[in-house]
Amino acid sequence: MAKSKKAVRKKPTRAQKVAATDPETVPSSFESPESSTITRAVHYDDGLMHVTFKRQGQPTYAFPNISQTLWKEFICAASKGGFFTLRIRPHYKGTMIVCDGERVLR
Image (cartoon, rainbow, N blue to C red):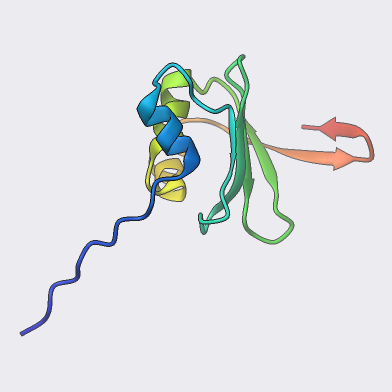
């Protein structure tokens, strides 16, 4: 008879704690060393979201039109990579940001 696996609950991140206690105060950025997919994400007031991925070269992509609600759901998700894969990547076109000295090329 196979043993059932216990669900392992991860400790909530600082961003998740802040968003849960004060829904009006959602961090505009986070660094995610615990994520296996995403290093960093930033959300701007105009709806632009920058995401830096954990893969060779650590590319950063810009995703326009990300609502504050979707950003909050992303911040509060237990799995940032899973949320991104299901809720953002299929619906929003990302553009890789390439830095050339001081210029940002899209």
